[in-house]
Figure 1: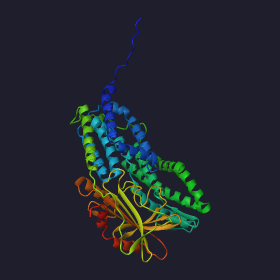
Figure 2: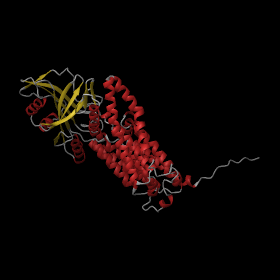
Figure 3: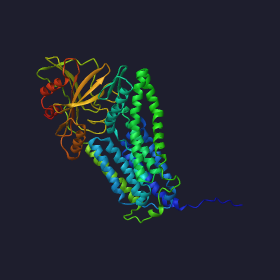
Length: 508
């Protein structure tokens, strides 16, 4: 007897989709390998940052969204499409801008857009329209929204203070510090509710697309998804301070972290769903897309291998361009030193609550204390970079006046001092400081961190001096002395900040 092995015939779906999917996986892997530094940075942020921990779920959600469209996709034919390369180029240029300016958001956005462009290029316009929402939802893979922390801190403070006064707790506020008789509380960035709002934005967008048809109802649900967590965060902060008033600060804050991390967010999510439930107008069995309407002939089609090679080639152009820009650097002196100033002499550093700005990537860094005849003390800090790149940014998270997990916290921003951006910071004790900051990038001196990024980008792309310098003048707040006046006098003795910065960089 002869045994025959029955082999099932290759289905149309297998034959039509196998090569495009293999090419897409290969191109995506090549892009992640080419920009592996940023891919690794994203993975590290997802895993370690409480603000962006929700990004870990975006990938599985995208997979589920594609899976819900599998029946419709099986009726369609992927076609490599030349215009999709424009999206790859847009992503590459965004990455280049971020790489040149030292803006991680732009680099990460560029990488994600290049991956989106790979999908559109290799699968074509019809498939891209069928996958429009999953492709767009991939933008939530980009960590963004840190700029929300400062305004949300202010909203939280404004929510908490009336509630404390309503229940009779004597509380006062200075910037982001709320003081009650049993201690003080910092409405820190982590307590601003930004991570809550960002997670709810991603969750609300998913629910709005999958549970609603009406754009008006979608918009209404998004408003609820953003307002409810902001109000809930204010109520949580109030409850924490109230619990501290009744018990102790340590017990209240420990309980708050457990409740907020594991229970509170889930309750607010459930609350938003309960609010929107009665207005859901999409049945779970409704088709997600209409495959019959997405069968148009794709113009400017390409052969699949050519499209994959061109997609990788476009990305390589921007990666190579970034490498060339990174090679630019300003020659620096081998050593730099603190200046000798008339009317001021060097003195030992303060031991009340040591403070020093942090610039881990600086080529040179100096720090010293000066005292004048009136007994006013001012600390001078200088950081000099020959060039800026990943890990060597003049401005960034945990770089500058306050480091990550610092004992010092920002209380409030102050009016500028001699053109430098000023802020008040405090440490346990309490000990307070006023800090004024100047940056020198290319031919511009500014106290604005955003201007630093713009000028860094211009210097990288258009040429000019590549060195970057940070200058900080700081004075402790002590009885009978005016830190602002002391800093202003020291700045006048130091002379023009642009000339001093260039001198420290060896350019004068």
